Length: 503
Image (tube, rainbow, N blue to C red; front, top):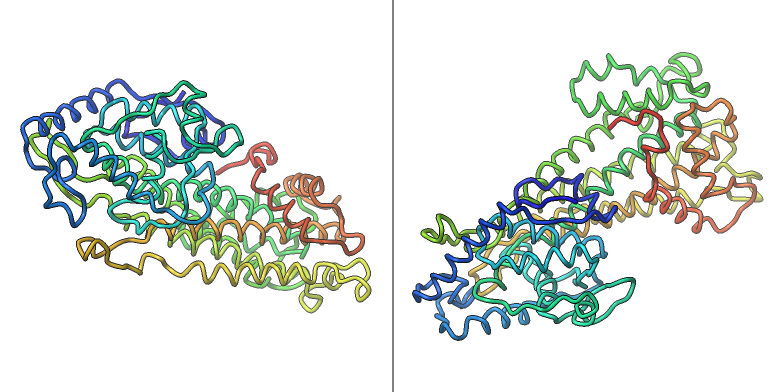
């Protein structure tokens, strides 16, 4: 089991919880902080102190004082009125991450909720009750208000969930698991929805997929080098040490490792002096994308353990400060940056696909066709890849440069971070399909060259790939092959596939 403290959650732990279904529990020390924070809220209510979000309205209504007997209705009305999400639901894994991250943030002890609120969130995670949360409707400041409101609905027995493969009313799933809905007390509704957990959850899932895809892209590129008799000299360690970027050095080292025993790569001057950039500059381009992914990882792990609601309670209630930690700008920038990095992995992959299928650029059969002219082979696969990378260029436009004022200009600058995170995820799905096409073409090319001459590591990928996609003996519906290869890449375990796999 993984202990949640509000301080120490990592992406590696998130992977275990989201994909290996590891259970979580709250640390006792953190729960003590939660209790003290709650006592401060109850004291404020009993003493009739005017504090935003506890006994006032919200946003432009922050100057409206709420009577003590109405604070429960205030929280309930907040959740219902703010549940304005639209569009398709987030993937279940993203919604689960959202619930987990909200629990972790509340455990920091700055939010003033009762321990039972966190206990219920943890129960949802452990019992795989996943709120149905529409993807669209968040501005990414004042928190992810709309998405998190749909999450909060489940705690009060409203809204819908995914449970054991079925979509149902949340109250039904709660009853099956013997979980009682809660009645939200002062500040609890606001504490649940005033945060960046939608964009961060989407970002976490996107990052985990992007990281895997980045590693796979290098192995696929190594196979493409074999298919094109690529020159290995450009990957020599001293070349990359001379520039100094660690990620570039690491990428080159992995490529050398993958191809160390290949009989299909060549030396400079053996056939030609140097390869095109899409081959020769793999460490420089992929390495630069790794630099971005390292930046994104750092920001996500900070935000995963951040207090992002408002107001925050300090010094046992002596200080209650209204601030702006709900503003998603850091994650918005990180997601926009990740979009560009992953789009570039697809861009350079598409150029390698072109080199594999274009007879003017290689000595392979045109379009890798078994019967050029009669059969088109991989011709239109390159079209599909070109379409996907073009779509990515549109999606890569930064969402974070946009802002639309809301709440009568009280909330006059917003991050659009959730849009950035959603678009990043779309780019990752497109990029995976581009790399799936490169894999299909590279496998065909190395077959022509002679798979017995392949390196052991790339041969392992070839054999795994052939379990998904058969050799092209004649034209067929390649759309199905692309999807099978893409799914295979998403589910692939490189640690099992590659000997001595090193991150």
